[in-house]
Image 1: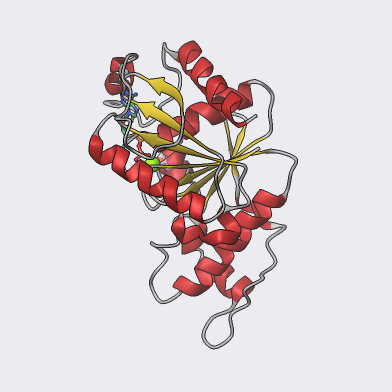
Image 2: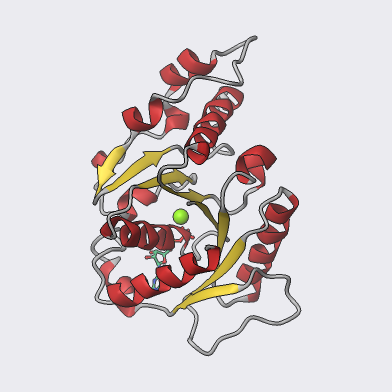
Length: 246
Ligand SMILES: Nc1ncnc2c1ncn2[C@@H]1O[C@H](COP(=O)(O)OP(=O)(O)O)[C@@H](O)[C@H]1O
Ligand SMILES: [Mg+2]
């Protein structure tokens, strides 16, 4: 199954992506984790030190030039089938691919970087042998219809605040308009009894994760969000979210 994770900045997208990937990897599943955010925090959240995190694809100018070209002619359908295994790093039984974000590609090679990044995502999405979890920047619209509508589901993460929920509702609406209607809401840092206001057009709530003091404490000395005492609870949360997409 291919899932994308979106939501307002800081709400817990990367953390949830890592919990989900780790849960699946421990079940023996073949899991591909894709960091498509500017912040590039998926590697560190999986426990990698900065020097272990691969260079993001969008910064790999030589590769972009080689596959897509530059200047007047851009190949919008570059060869990418060899890149996933070549560029990925294995961490805790998962494959990690660091792409970076299209919006952040810039630097005069934005179009070419976009072309390579989209081609990679589409390639990963249409291969149907494994799990794919894409940790997105806030929205989904920069991926475009063709890319986003090929994932099986969208997990929207939100905190129990009106601002975060408004972003969640906006992402949900945009994703649906791009053809991605299979969506679930994960409420992070939310008390068990919390329910969002009824008048907001939000995806159905698939799970709630409370604020975890153990994680706050752990983040003071490591970027990893794994190996928490709440692992069993997080496993159940992930299972509930996946159940939603079955
Ligand atoms: N349920 C939670 N309890 C406590 N801290 C959390 C929780 N979820 C996320 N965090 C922390 O909040 C920060 C932002 O989370 P992150 O997953 O990086 O958000 P995003 O990817 O949406 O920007 C991180 O330091 C993370 O460890
Ligand atoms: Mg993140």
